[in-house]
Image 1 (spheres, helix red, strand yellow):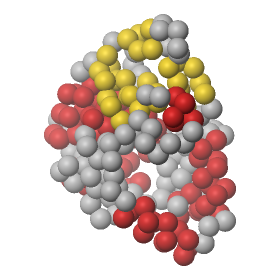
Image 2 (cartoon, rainbow, N blue to C red; image 1 turned 135 degrees about the horizontal axis):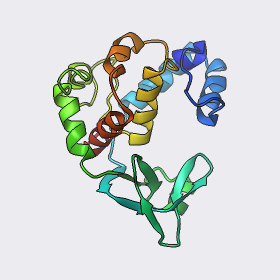
Image 3 (cartoon, helix red, strand yellow; image 1 turned 30 degrees about the horizontal axis):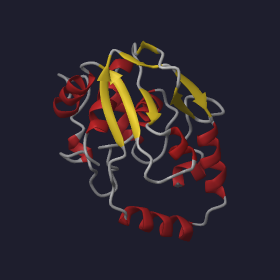
Image 4 (spheres, one colour; image 1 turned 90 degrees about the horizontal axis):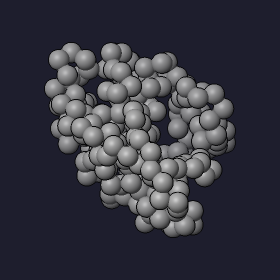
Length: 198
C-alpha cells in the first residue's frame, strides 16, 4: 500500500484499471487503516482457489471486465506461449463469491521447467526463489508468499520488475533476479508457484 500511495508501484500497461484504482484508493487510506487491514489479511489462512492444468489447447476466451472467461461454444485454440486463467464458474465469480475457483491453463512442461528455475536458479539465469520466499514459497516475514498465487499476476509482477515499472520495497532484490528471465521463464516460474498449495 505504501508503494501504491507513493506512486512507486506502477504497471507496464499504461492506464491499467486495477493498478489505477489501487493507486487512487491508497491515497485516501490512513496509515492506521493500512495497519488494521494488514493485520486482518495476514491473520487469514490462505486456501487454494486455483487449479493449474498443463495443456496444448485451451477454451476460446472473451474479455469480461478485467478478466478472461471461457466461451460457452466449446471452441478450442492453441495455448501458445500464454497463461489462460478463467473462473471455473463464471456466474459464481461475477457474484463475487469468495469460494469461486479458477483454472489456470499453462503450456505443457512449464511446471517442471518452473520447478527447476525456482529451486536451482537455472544455472545462473536467476536465483532460487526459496532463498527469499522460503523453501515452500509461502513467504518469510516481510517477503510475500507466492505459492498458490494467480500465475497471470505473478507474470505481470516479474515483467514489471524486469522493465522498471515496479519501484519501492523489494525492488533492489528482484531486479537482478529477473534481469535474465525470458517471458517463457516467467510463465514457467508462475505455473510452478501457482501449482503449489498456498
